[in-house]
Length: 455
Image (cartoon, rainbow, N blue to C red; front, side, top):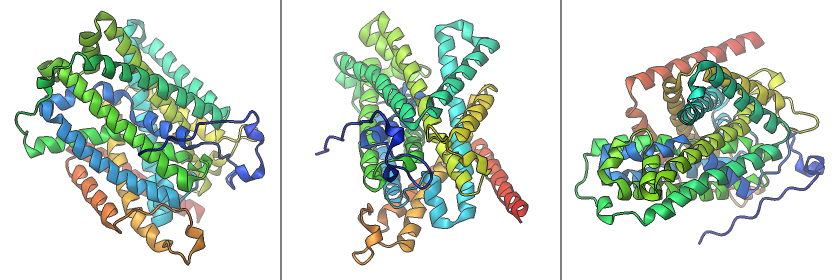
């Protein structure tokens, strides 16, 4: 039975903590299991869940639950690897730090670009665009370029200021947003359950295997982002224990939530669900709750997307900070604010770049490149587990490995995860492959340029 995570508590003068709470990076370890678990949920549950049920239903119908089950296994395998790697590498940087420690500076440099730019900045900009477009649905005034631009600047600037003020402020704000986004979804599940027609969710025939694969690929993208919460590992209390527990709690919450939402939407709308590709949950809420359900769910979608944006700005700058700390980016980005103990230069850099890209409005292009970047990061993380085991094997004779989480089954889980990710990458479209290849090519060129400049 899953135990109850400890409550999140902060002291009044946390920034004046004893030296034992301050890392050699100058950061402060204040993030506990509950905060990190909710951070994982916040980074995963975003705009996608408000569109996903209709897309999956159009492809698989009631058999969508099969894709959810397959995806749950795939995501669990990947995050088990992340859990072991996260218990071995406790410095700031998340997935980038795992890959760099395992395979060296070249692989680390490529992973760094994929993490903080390919997945981080681009997905953050895309989420900002999605929030602006949602706001325009409720208030058409914001569809005009000038009000939309002012909103985006205020959004990124305000969240950047909150996170500069301290990691506590960023964590508490992201935690509040996580609760705010889960409440409307939970209400929809509970109220909608009374309107479910159970014959609507009966699987009468199995779809083709290719369609199931396409649906699973779509769901993996929807589950992506939880690993970004680990970028702040350098500010996590007892990371060898906290990271695996938080991953378990976070992913479990998301799996149950997603499957319940899909079941309620399918049970309420049946065939109509596949026709509501833009706002299926809004249609579900309107059918189950009445006319006020539409407004209620629009507000819920806004809170959800806003929560993801706040989580992005909390976590992405830590990846930039880690890359600068390791000499992959200008050292100025690795500075820590003397009072707030936050990577303030990295935060300003990330929010400025994400806001500038968001102002272009190129949502589709951003989503394509960021999704492919995430899959490659997953691949590198799974392989890094095998390498880290060779570098630092766990045994009773090696006391420095105390507290490390080790996956059962030897290499079985990392290898199985690698196979699943390669299968998913093989399903990418030509446009996705070209965009991702261009980003990797630029990253490789930048790596050798940095080396030459140093020499």
